[in-house]
Amino acid sequence: MADNDALFEFLLRLGDNSLILGHRVSEWCGHSPVLEEDIALANTALDLIGQTQMWLGLAGEVEGKGRTADDLAFLRDAWDFRNVLLCELPNGDFGQTLMRQFLYDAWSQIMLGHLTQSTDARVAEIAAKAAKEVAYHVERSGDTVIGLGDGTEESHARMQAALDYLWPYVGEMFDGDAVDAAMTKAGIAPDPASLREDYDALVRDVLRKATLTVPTDVFHHKGGRTGYMHTEHLGHLLTQMQWLQRAYPGATW
Amino acid sequence: MSKEWPLWEVFIRGQHGLNHRHVGSLHAPDAEMAIKNARDVYTRRNEGVSIWVVEAVHIAASSPEEKGPLYEPSNSKVYRHPTFFDIPEDVGHM
Image (cartoon, helix red, strand yellow):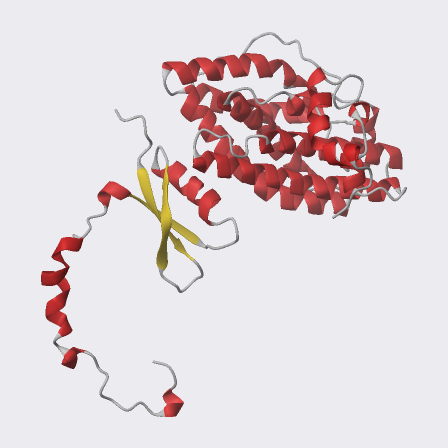
């Protein structure tokens, strides 16, 4: 069994990814371009929040200090979050939201596939449930990226701009550190870098069908999953997401 | 080309053994997305095991104005309704 702190940190990363992205996607509720997409995005957001409950619930259990998933979601500040920067970036236009979703879904699907084989039965169980949801998410976001990328001149230009903006945030999902080394050693999770080949195959195939050009610059932003430095956007997101607990500490219903 | 996505009629089979039932309509660019949208719009509460979608333009409908010629002739033919038989109690609902 790996060091408990490393497992806690690893679970925070998974839970914070789905929490922050889920909140971002929920911001579209009532604002999507068409009713069908509005409901689909709300469903995706709810799936992600559901996954958050499981990951952060387990994180609290592993930590052993009595913190619940709600405590972890609503009572931490920006520097304690461990999501990758990609998940906290603003929605932008609908195309940018769907591009971000696809870039994340593809990683998530591959990661969850490995986690279903985890030596930690609790992790494997959560991954098995989440994998079914994410299999649908990636199909939907991938199809939409293709539809809009290979669409009109305007939609193509917007999708290319979204890809150019978001691509430098992809690399962080494959970074590794001591936490990941401990997880890999214990057989709990794969080495993040080992997912890159499958990811590139999946993502590049979709982007090619979408007639989009993958940027060649290899630079990538980082600092989210380690908590070293988030973007300015996370703090703004938290003021909305945590508003109730900040205004009325300890409020319940 | 119209900028609106075409309208699709959605049919869902609630359980194995039942017929597909019309549940509503939605807009989608193609059949594949129509099924995905139907999944998101009409099966959120675990309603279905199978989805059919048909582009609404492909459904031929009878005209309400013709309801006289279409349906009234059958009204006066009571012998087409097998309501004259006594059904034994233990047969139950038929």
